[in-house]
Length: 123
Image (cartoon, rainbow, N blue to C red; front, side, top):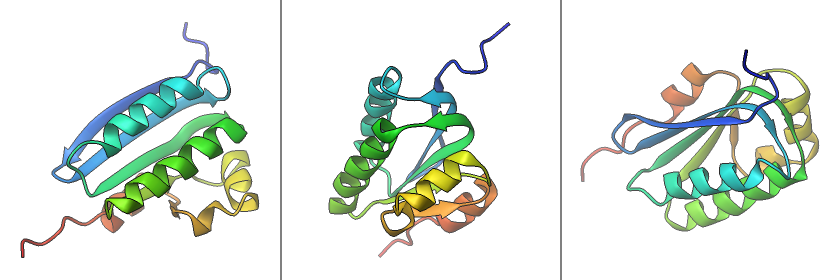
């Protein structure tokens, strides 16, 4: 049986110009470096949007917030858009209290984030 607190991350590309990080468990000082590594890998690829799905995350601390802010700043320099998926609960509450809605878009569902992350039209 898998420990529900065990951190897991999966990086996929549902379509061109889009990377999706599906996270589960807790993101803290211990699991933060793995999250950071995969997130930096995602934004370093040729994508316009990165979606970080916190739907299955039970806990985040300031480590996760710092990783998200640093990644958002770096990605924004490349004109990328970082979207966060987070339904109601403790994680969303912490993101709101920390003022993260000013740093990146927070979507309630994965479907909402996928609709928001529309492909770029060719010039």
